[in-house]
Image: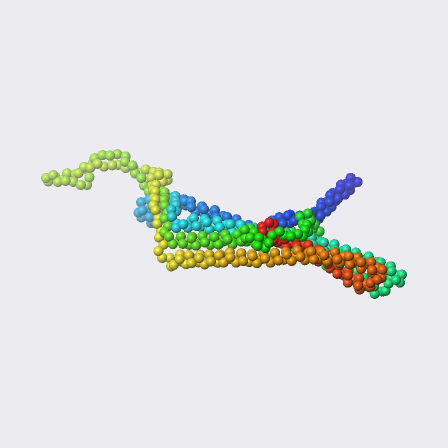
Length: 473
């Protein structure tokens, strides 16, 4: 019994250890990105579209091969019908069969096959770029959410530290108040500040949980309130970015999947015009077939005996009619089986087929017109994509530049207010300044710490966005 209890205790301990290990699983930034890409529905749909376009591209190349087909049928007939063997009317029950193997090879199609291959290759390239763009968009969103979690963790630590400072002051003033060495309003002011700091902690906890929910949603996993993130891949290093907006835009044009997708779609639209023009040309193909047939109504006879005998004809020799003798045969009906008929009835055909489009209600020329309109649209999208990209890069660079300046200004502010707050604490505890003056300085310092912490993460995010445009994520 003791051994059983011990075994149960060990099993429970192992289970608790496993649960604790799961709960304390620490995600790196790369793991978050990989998990999100694996589970994201937009990425999956883009992947499926790329697979479909790859299949279409392969099929367009296969269209250069000959077309080969075979058919076989077997059936029966009763009553008056045409015997497929003799092509004459018969009034009997019989069975019949025929088989055919045919082949066709395109010789000239006005370049439609080649241009369709090129068009589908460009479409495949565009869909692959769409897939990469979906991954890139998700990656930058995960990075932003990841940094938001780390930022909110730091904000929570700052809020708790502020609460701890206020709590110690309240404890000190309670002792001083009991000794009658301070006014009641001073203790009330500090209690109010302490309550405000508690609310800040509650808000920081909520912000942290909300940011974890956002990250879990992007990763496509159940929400984990105890989600732990590694800080090894994220360091707050605020230094000059090292590239101007023009260089960022140049790199973006060369590397952004969005730009490449627009370029490939324009190329595909241009090939579509060539495909439509090719339909106006004659087409030439080589055709051939080989087949045979069978009919149970078919009859086959063979000669059994040959002899000379009188016929119904005669000649007059004087007053006497002399019958005419001729060579005659005695025949018998032989079996005419399935295999024998198929071997005997073999036939082959081949030829060249020329198809010249003359008038198709102008649908072919309208197809060319539609293709040209689609090309103009693709060219416009390609050009507008580059213009919008230049605008986005310029805005992102300005945001990064502002975040860089803001970080350094706030750094100076924190250093100045930190010293001011230290002096204010000493003067407040010595009774030189009142609670109102102390709280003004303390709140200013607290805000500067919060803003400085946010500025560091904002700069990291802004630089990552520029790296995203440069294809360096």
